[in-house]
Length: 76
Image 1: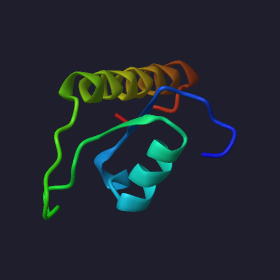
Image 2: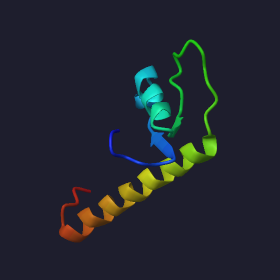
Image 3: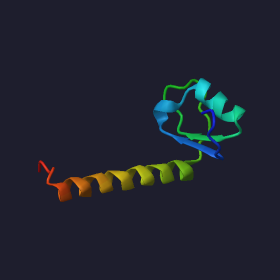
């Protein structure tokens, strides 16, 4: 994360590791990462921010789908 300046680190559950959380805190970012289900100590996450990240990913998925349709890359 060197050189990145942001207030929040919005990431998927697969990025839930102590190393990433500590690095985010060191550069003064608030990590918004849903905790893995197998964590010994569950921490609170900001569900609103996490849902917003999902909506952004969903928008990219729709854009990619429409791109495939316009370029004739559709398999269905």
